[in-house]
Length: 384
Length: 246
Image (cartoon, each protein chain N blue to C red):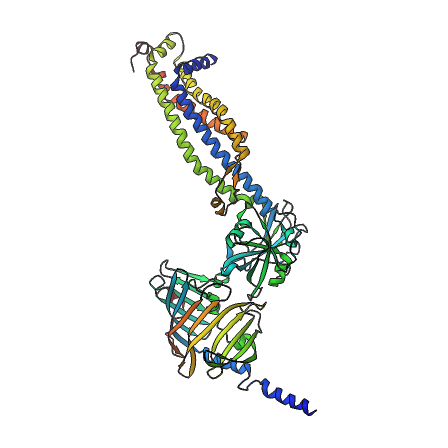
């Protein structure tokens, strides 16, 4: 086998430009696969961290009638949970309408405990201005409603019986988050204030939990583990990966086609060499092995070249991140304005294995015909 | 002592007692008598004023008391064939485009009707004023050249959309000419202006109404009655879900 590697190495170096073209195409496929997957892994990790910090905590307990994907459940999906863990943070959500500059914007009015520490929401800024209804909003909401910290704006809501009420709220802070579900169309106010405004004292739509273990939930409340809450995000990333796989597998297929052609040509042009190997005592399958190693060595070369040239680029990208346009953060999925790709060992190992194994298989397929060659005809250079 | 009894007499004469013509409750009962009926068949135009132009939607309504109502949209082409059925506090909408019937409940009822300043809930809210509000007479005013009594209404039940209302009632015809609807906090939310009051049978009825969201820019939504009949027989079977798909 050592001899096969030595001969393969010499043959490849001797082939010159043909070798480097094959290596170049394979190295490019290696970069693309690594880049796409690294970007998606980076996005996933950032989005998971942000979602836990801003929205999910260690898990949540939802009122049995509440479904965040169905806004019509907001009206009735709330209740009192007497056995709620003392460190859990209650959040009450009601529908409301905001009237900035004579425009009408339907919003979700979310009440949260001012002193909470589980979520990254800057609820301490409720105390910044001594106003009756202090509110904090996200950057996207502020841009949409054209509001800034210190602005007063009229809000209309309904009490527990459905009677309209309206008052001015004061924006005491605008926060920046990568999680659009706590930002877009949402206004955060102290929960005590919301209880007073709606008459729903001690009611909550859901609780954000401090600890990961499932609390003793009453029949009215359902426990949502952190992983369950993040499952949607994982699904999105998985589908994105599947989508991008089509593109890079196509690129890899082109590279492998070039390798296949090279192998076909090698067998055709080097028949006398094959006959000589067999005449010198090598078995046909040893010659097949030699040519297969030669083909798979393209991929090893590609890994070395790709690694040497790609390493500084990937390190730079992992440190600097890749900026995404603001519009891409408005799709309702947690996404930072700068995504830092993550090139983990498992991703690198997977990519190397994918390319080397596929290159080896593709190298083997055309050289199988060597096993059927007549050595005398091969020595004479006759195609059989 | 004479001054005390004199003041008492004046107060008694001016305050109005139930059953007296100037008593706010009596006025409200007369308003209810004008505006409500056993059955009603009405054809109307709803004119929605938007930034990109105006839309006029023509509809025909069959109503029985305040529990049953059937509406069919007649024009424009885009809305033609849409039907709405209200039975009690349930509302169904049929769309010919999708050939589906959708039941509206909860939050959906608070959505705007065809982009107007009216919500489905506003359209469904037709309880008698005397059932949900207590009234207080404020003063007399002239509005649209008519002598009106300004009443202040305060909700006496919990499940009412507007906690307070100000209503200008034509003293002679007992038809409201203007309504201001307020939030619990006292914030003005909606203004309804009623005009073109015409006699239909024995009652006076406004044939044009403008609904204006007081918090929003714009001129609101006009509701113009083209034809109205009171206490006439309603075709049988019209208040059933089966009619929606016919």
